[in-house]
Length: 110
Length: 125
Image (tube, rainbow over all chains, first blue to last red; front, side):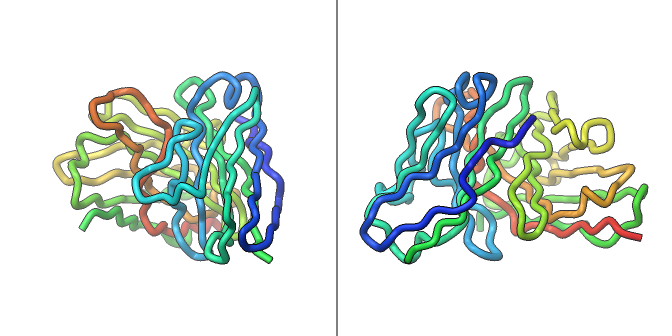
């Protein structure tokens, strides 16, 4: 159950698009279409942004999108806004009824 | 109001035991799989455990298997995490989370659509 690999930080200017990667293995991200993404604001509980790799829950802006290629999942935020500044985490099913999170990425809106 | 409220955290000595509770309200608790996730302040999220809606199946992260036990009381709308043989590395905020359930589907989504506010557990002498 090794943590998925995310960049420690990414940044972008308002209006730009950024992508956060989440790299696992053929035993987790690469094998199952069960990657989810969470946004966590300081001092708050995480919020679900994407599930099953690319699906958005009701109420989540369509500026957020998810995809996967091989063992790497990605979260793209388009039209970056100041309110998007937060920590982002990916999570994947890892087999044997277990799950694994990524280490988290701090998004800075310049 | 639809919510999850954790309780039971606190300061405990290494080797000690603690039971966390998560009270659910505003939804049909007995229909949902539930999870525990922990986070060391300033660090990342770590999945801890899952329990099926009827309690028939449980699973754990390697780091807590054999020491932690997840359970639920659907009559009381409450999820529990019994933590034994606590270690300093178990120090974290513990969140309970509800697994997303898709309409008309029974398969796992492995996504958490509702979280509690968290309860802090500190293991220290």
